[in-house]
Length: 374
Image 1 (tube, rainbow, N blue to C red):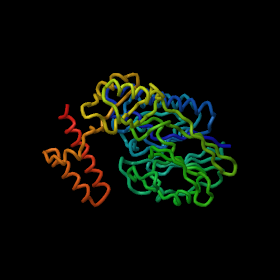
Image 2: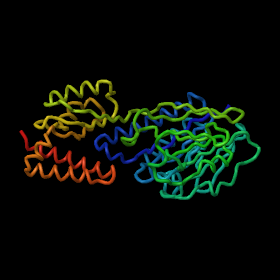
Image 3: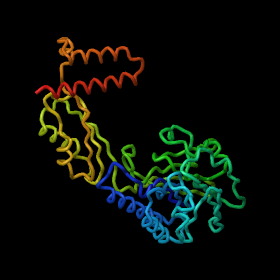
């Protein structure tokens, strides 16, 4: 039985623009997560630690972080650490990947396909690394083929499997699933897509490739638990994967309707109820929605202060006042004419995207009208 830990897209020293004052604390979270993954490698006594790119940012990555990684990898020697650089950490002459001396158990893949042989495990680990941040060709086009005489074949690759899971990302290093299957790998450890996904072999109908997802959330799209993959491969080449949570904090998004709310006190009480189950160590992005009393305008600054028990809370107001739009249009004043024009535009809209833009404009109009009513 062969085993491994597979992670990708850690993005150490990434800018994290949404955090500002909390940046250094969040960077410490990322380092804690890497130490946690290291501990998992030791606890599970795996054969390999596979890292599929975007480990340490090429732009903005700090020497101290590179030294942290060097010492971390040395602490699990002789367990092999196999790393395939991605678009955020390409294999460049001036990157820390080349300018630092790394422990002997760290194996780097470059823009020339590499194959590290482990005869004692009857295994070969293949990999390829980005030469620059933007690469739009399939790296499999130059794959030389697998070596003979070994029982197990693994691949580490930062790439875009062309599927629904990759639609939101740039198609860097695009790979067709059938072409990946044709390489004959038992398992392909992938990186680039921050959402976890597993892929079945087109013929065998069993898992043979996966994205573990980012182990720490980098933006509001990366909600919930963040994981790495623990994998086992038996003598027949069958792969079994387990998602293991490793993230220090979760990114959470909540939408809360203010319908019927007329005062800040009522709003604070409502949020206390709605957020009671949320963990204080997490990062919350709360959107206030729905119709509210025209005389009441929520203060997001007050709410952020009152709920400062959370590591981070960001409150956005997308409510609108309970203004009688039909009555205003009937009165034919300036506000009524504005609303009537928007209503006509909505009727004439040719698609849903245009209608949604007009609805947003209507909400903005109602908000301004409500602001003038006391």
